[in-house]
Image 1 (cartoon, helix red, strand yellow):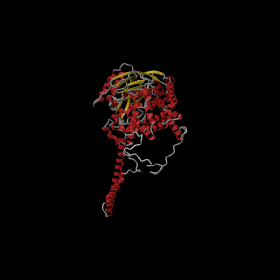
Image 2: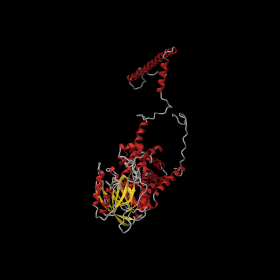
Image 3: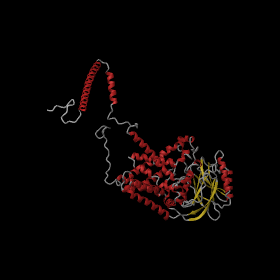
Image 4: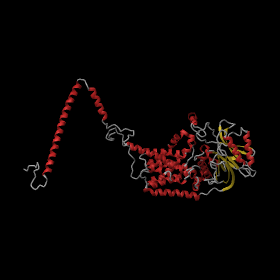
Length: 620
């Protein structure tokens, strides 16, 4: 047997150097020595520790130190992690939850921003083409939500962003209520978001994508229907209203009102979202865009404009802004001065803006005499607006009052639909304090009870022209103008005052609504304001002449074409709303029955409820 080489011995022929081998052998020996020393030290420490534990046990048996040891054991148990205890709910910096919470917060801000995008399509910016793309980011965000709860949150936050952006000019009136009101209205978009995710989420099948093209716009239309209730602010900011300058959209409005235009705009957005989000369904998206283009083309070239049946010359009197304690009297004097300048212009009607008269002429013979003299001097009836207490009944009313050369004609219309907070405070007994922090009404206005069609005094050649007055906020409601036309109105007259929102988008937006009311009813509309914007529109919704802006104190005379054409909207009314309700109901029924389920997918099994820490839910 060969003996191992040590101390540098080597076999014959081995070329290693003796010094290097010796160094390596010495190093191994030192390592073995250190290892033995370490093991001896550990044995000594264990022996000493055993003796200390023995002494401690003796002390415990004698009654000393037992309580301290118990407390120490409790502390040790508290420090050890409990595998059955759920993780803390709050975001802990450095934990896995903290980045997730930051991503969720960022997504929430993105949802608010996406909801605000459609505001750019409305006046005063008026980027009408943007309306056909503005909802796409919001739709894409909702469809990527990880679950229904997140999708609903995206819908709610986007709805808040929409309300804040489109109605930002309401802040002076609503003040501290603006954000709560936006949060309340934003809830309307919550079920819509669930509908969007249900139809567009994941990789939708062709039937689901096709259903989305009609169901998503229908769901949006139902939102507009609910928030059009007067108590929720009325139909201001309807998406279709952004298309007031587009002739093809005005022709659509003559068929189905502004509702049909909104339906088309949201359908185009849904089709674009399909093109972007689902490459495999681009054929459906292209078909949707083609269908929208076909509808617009058919409306533009297949629906004729109303037939003209004469003209009417109307003067719009806009006195301008007069503030201060004597502002109302100075405004009246300026309107009187401007009206006198119209003498000899062969007018059929002179219109003043809302709240142009600060006292009821029935109780002020001097004011009645001045208005009668103006009508006689100009040679035309004078339609003024009174914002004052009536002498024949209690309360403040906003009323359209018609004067002729012979005096008050006896025709009067009291405003029926009032602006929340601006003209009355809901639940004033509870919310009355808001008047001290905002520009809410100090006293509630009273409501009228019925629409009125007035008849202008005849000239001897026949009966006078029937006109339908609307006061300010009421021009936003399509049903009111339709009702007046069905009652025989040949001319719609809007008396308005938006001085509270003078430097905002509100005056331009308000004036644009008259174009839609004209197109819907096939009747010309004269929109007269105290401080701008004043404008006039023909029966096809086309603006006649330039507008009087918010910086003008002037008069404008417009010759408006008349028409006796009955539009489809006047005849059939709000049929797109009933269609939308039927579509959403049918889609919900199909979804519940599984008719729209993806091919090969089965109903999701209900998760079993298991005890915490069981095999079904380990570690919970």
